[in-house]
Length: 125
Length: 106
Image 1 (cartoon, chains in turn orange, purple):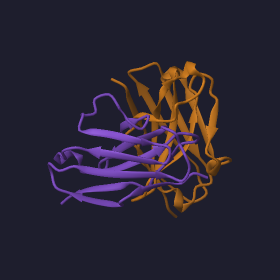
Image 2 (image 1 turned 135 degrees about the vertical axis):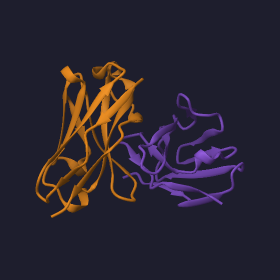
Image 3 (image 1 turned 135 degrees about the horizontal axis):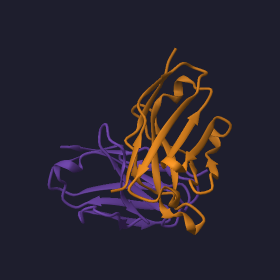
Image 4 (image 1 turned 90 degrees about the vertical axis):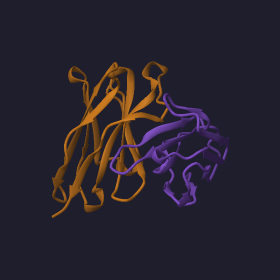
């Protein structure tokens, strides 16, 4: 079955960077865009951007441009999201989520299924 | 900039009854709307896309309707496992979620 398994929880100090991984299985990793969405404690969902695992192309939400970098390693079917210059309000659960459209269409459909289990990133001094 | 507004923030319904959740967009998103269910400590789960198409494996008691700026998620006969937070998400341009409706047991 299609599955996304994320790396474990992280605790970081303000100003540091964090890199979260998302390992895909059960489908062709390079066939679907991968998105990242975050959720602050007790809050709603916030889209951060996507990566095209086939080409490595990315599209970031304006809010995160300059601070986020999405990459992938196709040899191990894993996507990564790195967020730099962390602040306390970056404390959140970070999810990877697979786009529902096949990549050969040339654009993501921008709705998501399935999702990874989430990675809690805590930013605290 | 599009704003997605869900109402009510909290909905109290008895098991077996019908629940109706609303989602409004500040400008038209056509039928480019999805609904997700999230239970405590879990990732969101896709329920509906294209405003009214159920995702694979989603029970028929879940239905979506609407287009343009007004959307509704209806759960026809609530089961115990349906009590959760529900989010709408537009994808007419970049993905944007509503703030969620908590469906609780009355």
